[in-house]
Image 1 (cartoon, rainbow, N blue to C red):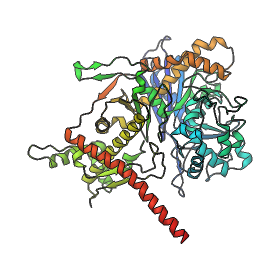
Image 2 (image 1 turned 180 degrees about the horizontal axis):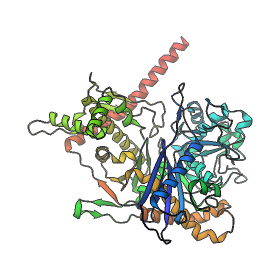
Image 3 (image 1 turned 30 degrees about the vertical axis):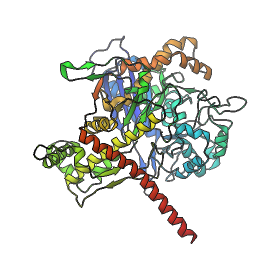
Image 4 (image 1 turned 90 degrees about the vertical axis):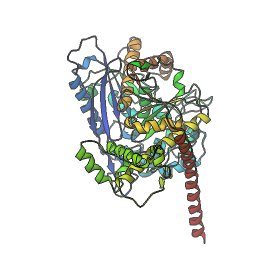
Amino acid sequence: MHPTNTLLDNYYIGVDVGTGSARATILTPSGEIVASATHGTKTWRSHKNSSIFEQSTSDIWGKIAACVKEVLQKSNVPPQQVMGVGFTATCSLAVVNMDGEPISISEEESIGAKGERNIILWADHRAEEEANFINSTKSEVLKFVGGTMSLEMEIPKILWLKKHMPEEKFSQCQFFDLPDYLTYKATASPARSNCSLVCKTSYVPPGATQESNGFDRSFLSQIGLEEFVNDTTRIGGTTNSAEGPTSGGIVFTAGLPVGRGLTKQAATDLGLMEGTPVGSGVIDAYAGWIGTIAARHHTGEGENAELSAHPSIEESTQRLAAVAGTSTCHLAQGTKGIFVPGVWGPYKLIEFIISSHPAYAALQDRARQEGTNVYHILAEELQRLRAEASKDRFEESLTGLTKDIHMYPDFHGNRSPLADPRMRGSITGLALDSSLADLALRFNVTLEAIALQTRQIVEQMNSCGHDIKSIYMSGSQAKNIPLMQLIADVCSMPVILPHSPSAAVVVGAAMLGRFAAEVTGIHAKEVTGEDLFQTQSKVDEVGESEKERLWGIMVEMTQAGRKIEPAASPRDKRLLEAKYAIFLENMKVQRKWRDMMEQAENAAKTS
C-alpha cells in the first residue's frame, strides 16, 4: 500500500493470462511492484477426449477486470496516474465473430454458434492430423518454426475448425492469438502483434528474407486455407504477392501503442481512464524474456556482494531466457536470423510425478501436520537418504542417489528440440517400492531430466549459431533452487534468478505498457482524434526510430537478481555427463521402438 500519491507519480499495469489464472500487477518506473492480484480462470476438459482444453474470453476478461480493480484498490493509485497498460497471455486461439462476440469452438456446444467456450487452449492437441498434413507439405514457411509446425500453433487449429464448422459460420469468424485478442478487446483495434503472428500463425514478416512479405499465399492455398490468400483481415497481417501486400491489417512490434488506447467500455471494465495507452502484446514466454533478460545480478554474499554492470543490448544475444511455469519455454535474441531445427521445454511434469505416486497422500498428510509444503518434505527426505548413503568419509550427493534411475520427460509430447508430439515419458530403474523415499527419488530424477533437456536445447541452439553463455530463469520453477543448481551444473553455465521469479512475466507486460505510453507521448501530436498508426509504413518508421527505447525501459525496470554458478563435484560432473548420454540414447531408442511397432502393425494389416 502506498499511503500517499502525488500527481507526479507514474504507474504502469501489466496483465498476464496464464494457463489457469489471470494476474495484474501495478509497478513504478523503477520496476517496484506496488500491488498484485490473481484470479483463477475456467478450463473445460472433455470426458471423451483427453486432448481437449477449452477456455472462454468472457471469463478471462472478467477475471482481468477484477484483478486490475483490485490492484488499484490495494495500491491507492488513482486511475489517472496509470500511464500505460500491457497484456501478455498464453498462445491460445480465440475465436469471435466480426462484432467481437464469442463463437464456440467446442463439440460440447454448437461449433460456430455463439457460445461461451471460444478458446482452444495452447495445450489442446485436437489438431494433430492437421499438423501432420501441414508438415507433409515441406513448405519453406516451416523453417521459420524449426522445420516442423506444432499442433499447438494456430494454423493447424484454424484448419481443424474449418473442417468442423459450417462454411457460412467459418467465413464470419475472426481468429486471434490470445494476446492479440486482449488488445483488441481493450482498444477495439484488430491490429496484431508481430510476436503472435510470427510464432504461431506462419507469418514471415517483410524483410526477414528477400522474398518474405507476410503470409505465403501458396502455403495457405496448399493447406486448404485459400479464403485467406487474398484477404487476411480475419487472421491479421498481409499476404505476399507479385503485386505487393494485399489487404489484412497493421502488425505491431512489441509494445507499440494500439488504436487510441482503452475504449470507454474497456476503461469502465478495468476502472481506468479512457484513452490510457495499450502496448501491443506478446506471448507470455516472450514477456518473461522482456522481464528478465536485462537483469543485473549480485555476486557474492552479504556486505561483500557486488552488483554487475548495466547490460548492453548486444549482451542480450548471449543470454537464454527460460520461462518455467506449466511448461518451459526457451528464448534467445540474435542480430541475424538463425534457423534451429525443432526449436520452437517439458510440461507440468513435476506436479504429475508427485501426485501420481502411491505415497502422495502420505506426503500431503505429513506436509499438513508439519505446516509446510510437499517440496520441503521431499527435500528433507532426500537429505535423510543422503545421510544414510554416506559412510566413513564419503558423502553421497543427490546425483549419486539417483545414478541408476533415468527419466525421459516428454510425457505430453516434445516441443523442442524434436517438435514431435508423439514422444512419451519413461522412467527406468524403478524398484518395487511405493514409499515416500521412492517418491523423493523420483522427484529428484525429474529435476535431473528437466535440466538434461535444457542442456539439449542449449546445445542445439549453439550448434546452429547462437552463443548462449548464461540462462535467465523466470516462472514458478525459478523458486526451486535445487532445480536451478542442477541446470547450472548440467549446462555448465551460470543461472540468473530474477528478483521476483513468479512476477517476471507480468513485469514484462507492464514494461510494454510503459513503452506504449512513452511512444504515445512523443508521437501523439502528429495525429488528432485518430489511431496513432494508420499505415504499416508509419508503424515501421516509428518502430525503427524507437527500437532502443524498450531496451532502456527493460534495463531501468528489471530489478537485480541472484547468480547461481555451476558447483558440481568432479564425481557428479562425470555422473551427469553419463546421464546426458543415456538421455540422448533414450530418445533415439524410443523413436526406434515406435518405428518397429508401426512396421509390425503395417505388416499385420497386409498379411
